[in-house]
Image (cartoon, rainbow, N blue to C red; front, side, top):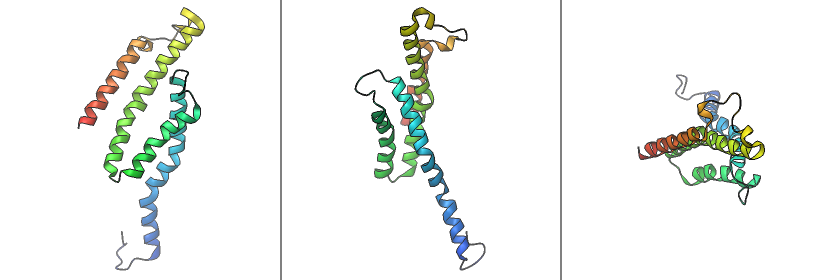
Length: 145
């Protein structure tokens, strides 16, 4: 944008740069928050063992986006990969947390921890596995496009 000038003033260049860099600033500032949230959820969903370390799940969530941006210059491919990962975050993580929490509560409280007063048919492990299956199918279908 030149504001109708052949040789635009300095403020036109400043505003143009700010507008072009704004998506970079907003994405960069939100990245640590998203990474910490995803790592904490993943930590709770993993069984105790070698992967059940806070720093390792944080690294597991942080390295793939950094790797993609460092070695892939095609932004449409990066956004496509981010969209595909969205299936896992949007469908997979809640289903895994449901499965994990139901198994944990059954371990701690026995059959009393199996159903809560506000349980619905969608609170069962069967529905969570169905959601994981649908998520995997959506992922495969979108990856094939």
